[in-house]
Length: 327
Image (cartoon, rainbow, N blue to C red; front, side, top):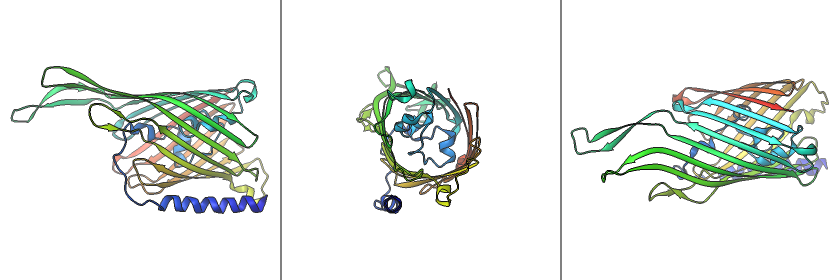
């Protein structure tokens, strides 16, 4: 078992390398609704987004819905809030329900809301400025999903989520005098699996997020930010034969293949002391404006409070907060 698991680990790392270097071309501006690609969980952000094989938290609905199959409590609630770049406000929440100890699987609900703030509207006009003001408008976006996950065996879990995604970009004043609202909606699907190898805490996982048909506002169509990820995670203290409940060091590595960006790898580490206090560090390859992140977490009496700090180049730093509760 140890030889097979170790061989699988080296094979996976080799696949990560080939996955990240096989396609070097730059892919930009090929999808819309990019708010769906923003990390929602402060814990995940602090771990560089390497969250494909993480489980037991309602927030995994934003990464891999299969992770909710391992909820250790009947009810789980998570709320996230942060100001992203350009003062774009993100608020999201996830709720899970695992009746009868998860015997019938885990049901989930997620919602993600984005406020882009106030923007000034203009319209092309034959005057000295070349435009006239049409008033302020307030773009919004929202995604609402329902999910289901189940353990098929004691080692293999699957999960899926269906989301209704919408975005409103204000109104346009046409030359004919007609005012048209710029609204687009789509159905999207997330799907994922996690496999517990049985070798200590070693896990493999994969997820496909934001799979949908092409949508459009007017003539030019676009697709959602479809992302395929594979991941691996393990408590590295297992290799040191440390069986203490005082310490735990999780290492998580994901390889991501997005539709509108080149391939990259996420690295995340998480140190737990007495299963109550956590320190986190993450790193993302192939990004210019941001790459590393830091965070802390406190867990006690069913509550979990997480904070993440992520420098974002010329846009400044992002401070992210999440609160979870399980009962």
